[in-house]
Length: 286
Image 1 (cartoon, rainbow, N blue to C red):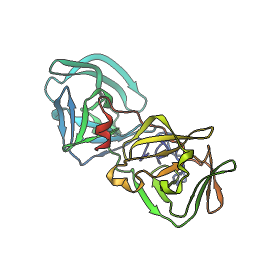
Image 2 (cartoon, rainbow, N blue to C red):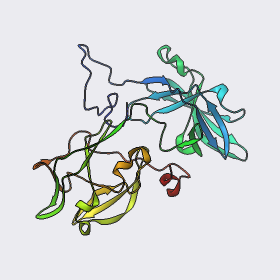
Image 3 (cartoon, one colour):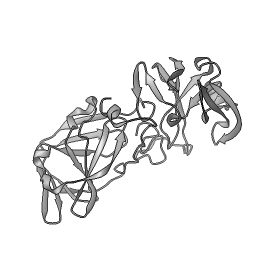
């Protein structure tokens, strides 16, 4: 997802490769100025506010925002005496975060002596995402993780025919699917509910959350568990897939113009957990 997460170009599971004559390092870290105002709220107080945030991408992690110390409120950081070591960036000093009548241990950190090539991280503080009440860009809450500027979603119409079968049972036949292209993932095919034998879909408990698409509902089909999913009320940026249904090609038979689709690199999703204090209504109205 994006630059370094899941199958992105700087991730350990990248599905592409750099065309260079020399071997590249196993791990790439990439830092850049976010160029957006970001704020952090803790105990219902603004504890950081900056237009000079550095976004750090490292393999296998969501992007992490680093704030200048001068953009963090006075007496917010409480030294804990805890120091760990980052494999690339050296000693990591941890802090409790304090505001009002609340203190949370190990809720912020900084690299106390980063190597010369990472000097732009010197004197910058990162906050543990789920330890904070919320992160904002301007006045809008950012859900899930710092926005990755390299994450993109495109949705396209197609006249190709999509069929879904479970054994001898036809679940879907659609001549108007949508295909969703998302950074780092294989294409996902969505069909209108009118083209689905809706009686075959059994809703199941448990939703997942995508910071870019919203809350996702799941369905069993016969003995195939969680074989289909739908963003019933997708975010406005991707509302073309709202209430459409997509299917797991490793759990049911999915055919595109008569050719069966099979899972491919980039098809498996690592679900995102829900932010602390985030309720369903807030996710739906984002």
